[in-house]
Length: 283
Image (cartoon, rainbow, N blue to C red; front, top):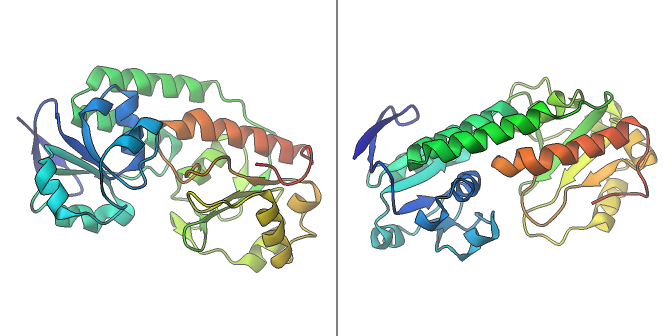
């Protein structure tokens, strides 16, 4: 057994050198565990852990901040991974009875790479995590900045949410040489002022629907009309973009944010900077 100090708990967490019965309540940590070859040692996940597809076959023990204690008792995990932010209080409660290791929620793109490294260290997969982190860094190093565009980002998290300075989403847009409407707000997320968005008149609107919803391009077009945004630059230039797939995309800080979301942002912001995209609201 090893004792690992955790900044969130302000205490040591005792775990095996190579935990064999892990539970992850973090979709990002779950994805990272699979990518470093530790997926077989996961015995339970949250209902939102859907990357990679193999994660869906793992036993569901709760939601993002809820758990069925009797399942944890049955599974006898030797390591439980959570994140800070919305899960912080949940992690503190569980830590009174189980070996919980909360990981800091990344606020920058570089923080996502660090997050992957920490997952590997705690899971006893140091070399594989360093290899994955190195690959992610190389990918970031090859990213080409786009001509400056201003974007508005919105994610449906039970209501419209946008992102301020303390968000890896905002940082990714800045990393690409662009800016976002709420980038100066000293917060991770906030409820947007829709009239302010209209006044700011961004070059691009990046919209992510609620996870697993059937929200499509036509729904986004109707939402834009309902808000009276038809005259905005992003709408006139066909630069309203719906994130791909039914899963969290921008609202996911696992390795795929760097391998999939950053290239998607690069493409869409590049189209917006050029003043057009081919053919209306895009998925």
